[in-house]
Image (cartoon, rainbow, N blue to C red; front, top):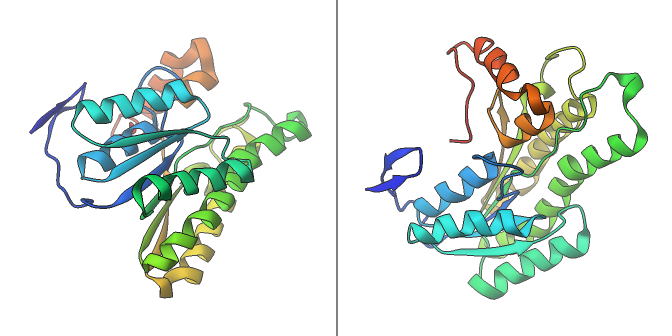
Length: 241
C-alpha cells in the first residue's frame, strides 16, 4: 500500500504495466488537484510510464515529482497543444524515450469567461475552441499513428455536462459548445479506428472542485463551491479523484 497526500492509502493495481500514457494537461492550473494531475498519478500507480504534458513546465514537473516519489516513471514535456509542431514533437519524444504510445488522455481544457452570447468576443471564442477542441483533434491525429502500428490504443477525452444541458445564466458560453464538439469528435474517432483495436471514450464530467473552477470565480470560490455542493445529488461535488 502507498499513502497518497490527502487521499489515504491506495494500492497499485499494475493493470497498466508496460504501457505508456501521455496526459495532456498533466499539471494543475493552480493550487490543488486538477483532473489531469490526478489522472497522471493514477496511471502511474497502475504501472504506466507517464508523459506529463503541460504548457506550464513547473506544473508538469510538480506532477512528475509526485509520480517519481511513489516509485513511478515520468517524462515531462512542455508543449502548447494547440500548435502542430509541439504535438508532433511530443509524440516523437515519447516514442524516442519509451518506444511506444498506448494511451492518450486529453485532459487539457479551459473554461473561458463567464459570459452571455453578446459578451463573447471572437478572440475569446477562438481560444476556447483551440484549447478544448483543436488540441484534441491534433493530439488524437498524432497519437493514432503509433497506435495503429501497435494494433492497440486507448484515447480518453473530457467533455462536460455543460455540453448536454443548460447550467446557469452567464455560464461560459463557448465552453459548452466546445465540449459538445469534443464528444462528437470522440464518437467519430471511436468508429473510425475500432478495427485497429483502438478505443476512444469521452467522459462528460459533472461538478468538480478543481483549480480551473476556483480560478474562474476568484474570491467567490468558497461560496460558489458550497453552492455547487448543494446542487449535487450526493450533497458534494466531485474532485479529480
